Image 1: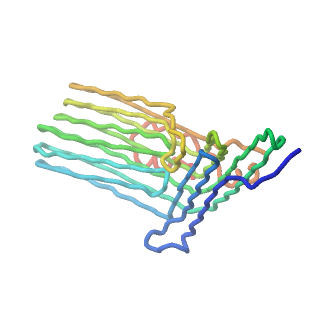
Image 2: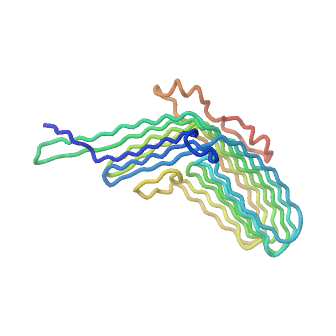
Length: 301
């Protein structure tokens, strides 16, 4: 005997087209909220047609303070802080470039609720399945050289892309630092299954990321942190687990060379083979030099 009942499923889906929101923001995005029993999953995604380019050079002595922050898409975030409050000689050159493009988005969902058994022994089963396929091409580059000689300087940078966070910082009296970060992506697929007990999310994207750091420092502290965890655009009722956390601290004289690469490709299946040809997989770029133009022109989009 089977009985069918209305599920205790709550699904909220909002698709915001750029033509329906304030032109000053120019963003395209969507929000999805799903609750099944005590488990819930939320995602907030946005992109915008944007081209940003900034090249800078700072030379001199004395006090200096700056803060930079750029978030063109929901899964790419960059911030940087540099300050000299006790004087010294500073040389800083930077090249920051970002391109993001709105594209097609496909969202499908399947809600299930049923009861098996007799009235004396009922076994209920509820679940929600959400599938997202979006093509929002983007690429981001930040290339920086810093040299300092004085009493004290503090500098830090942080990058976050799809749950991959890389950050470095230095408190130095003598510093030579060259860093380059590049992230390129053209397609993302997300599959989420929500049951009363748990949330299962599979996330695949055509993307490539690289971070290169060359650091020579004399000072009180230099740090490097690499974290892989749940992307910031997702929220669940379960605490996200860190799958990777590498933290390093150095004091005194430091001579460091670091290269970090991450690449992803959407698996081609019978369901997406036709559309996959429209968005070529990222090319696994080899960032072996600090030439900003060669890094930014590494093709993926």
